[in-house]
Length: 98
Image 1 (cartoon, rainbow, N blue to C red):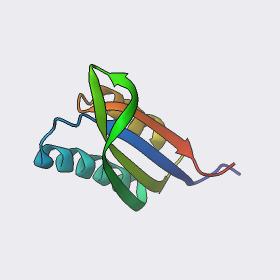
Image 2 (cartoon, rainbow, N blue to C red):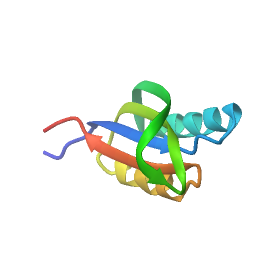
Image 3 (cartoon, rainbow, N blue to C red):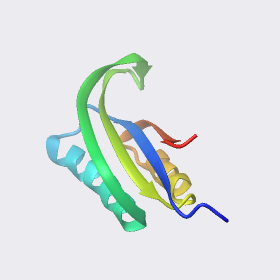
């Protein structure tokens, strides 16, 4: 039988030069998107942190960790949307199940 839902974590790093409203809007957009395809357990905003290496000449990034459950096809779509969003510098989505 095919897996109906899976548990995932999405960690993404946004441009730290965005204003508070712009940052909140991007976080809310991804949260609403995940809620429309499943359930969101937690959105943990880590805030600005130093990057291990410069990205686009920036040494800091705004980190957000989102834990959610969705059908197995959704993480690929979420990853695609994060890649085309200019506010997101890096993103990674992993399955919490082995």
